[in-house]
Length: 213
Image: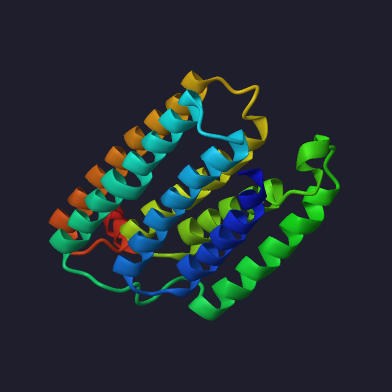
């Protein structure tokens, strides 16, 4: 199953560009959910087979990243009655260009790292760096809180992919601990979204500046 790792990572990189290029929040949430499904498949592929540990991690990833968290974001989207990211700090085309630049630099930088022989020619490290950079771009350049949550998810997905390079050394409980940290963070972001929507009838994070008054 390891032959499927690089094709899955290529699809993951394409989803990164989709996240950077779309203004529709519902499509953004769907893209984040698809990343969760890809991560679950990557877990099984990197392990080289369906073991108990791989199956548990894959199921937890599917449950949280593909079902639970997207459902929470969709509900927040419905309650806030918004549909698009209208005025990002950096436009969608420049974001795509920055994403392409970050992906290229990730490929170059990964070649300079002292990786294990089995990962030297793999896209695991470049894809993890590029996905984390995509998440950072979404966090830094988008105004809607829901978009920023998706950015946080993409950033964590990059860390998750990097963790797959240490799959033999990283115990199951550590990986589940990362997922639990993610759930806590999403609940915190959900509370923030609810309060912003309640106070301002909007989830544009730039309106937080009015709290200074």
